[in-house]
Length: 163
Length: 419
Image (tube, rainbow over all chains, first blue to last red; front, side, top):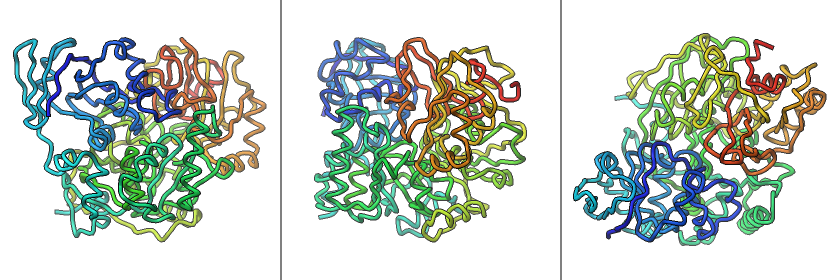
């Protein structure tokens, strides 16, 4: 599986309160949540984002609240993948559980800039920066996570295990 | 090699003799928790796990506390969704507003968590129950749905950082100052994926409420859990709450730690986190003068009875500054009643504070104290991210109840020793 698109670039500690502010948590409707995604740090995000685009951030992406509404809003906005130096642990779990592609890659974060055209191959973990003609290798997922992801998330994985 | 307290609890829950950090395990759960924000998503996911009923209707807790009492029509729909599911599934630990409160104050108070338990909650501050010698951690709604359906959750066994406490707090220094100090030292990802284990002779001097506050904010350093050893204070608390028989684990002397950090409690000072990260801490020796518009004393971090007593100690016989709105939020109905009977409400009312029914409300910018553009609040809550309590251009300063109350009196962030 692959995604290709333009990069939205953010810094350290992007918290779930800015990914989807709590004032919108009186709903769990994915489209409604997506329409407010990132608005407290990037008002243009929702206007500009296209299907397949990629978020690249620095350390501790998704810190704060456990709200699954955060990865859900990002996924529904059209973002095909989030690349970061590190993820906050609940956000990491939630993303895998709901099928939002996330990758950890220092080298990609060192080199990718806002607006770059990037292609990500999830199977190999290869990240191609088409604008700069560079290639980076992301950390592979441990085998357990890979089986969770290939099952399509936690629910189908557990349902399969129980049968 | 020996194991840490966290490794021992997880090994037992996974039915294994031993586990080591980094190992992926499937653990049996003692309790699965959700609130009015996260449960509706979990309820939607629940059927996908192929089960018609929850794994154990005594081991699921649902507590409408974030936007309850219902703040608007949409919030009312979400609370209704939770109420209907709880009725349908005959969930024993569903708490309607009249008997409820903020989830992380309520569960321990009702005796629903004991030492040795493994608890997940679809709320990041579920790590609070580590104060009771339990392993507890925040997860998302899909994990909650999985927990409700199967009674299990997957974990990567965390490595640990050991915090060795010695000495005693000085006057007006509390568990809140300790945890803010630690987050200031190690950063908001300083314990990412790890366990924060608190130990040492200084633990004995910490009240249970202090320990709850410390574990509550472990997530603010990125930790998976925070945990204290069980001592006489823990056992007395569990007994009074009517909790199940505790199962006590202790870290082995040869357990392995990523890092050991010693902290002398007597050297700590009142600590305030400036916007917009809990790690952006200052003490009064290096603090600029900051005018505030609002004070919030409450939340799962600092809405317990000793927090209200601390605020009352400062506010007794004083009045808050005319430029300030001060909002006091007892965390549960029991705490509300205690505070009322102890005469704390008279002190708050005489001082010009408003007293709210238990709710998470303003902590996450829900309602009951939202900030306008340019306004500043000092708050005993746990996060000061951009827009956390309202407008994206408002600011939140995190502090202890003593500091928050002293600041209400002067209208500026104030050292209680300077009043």
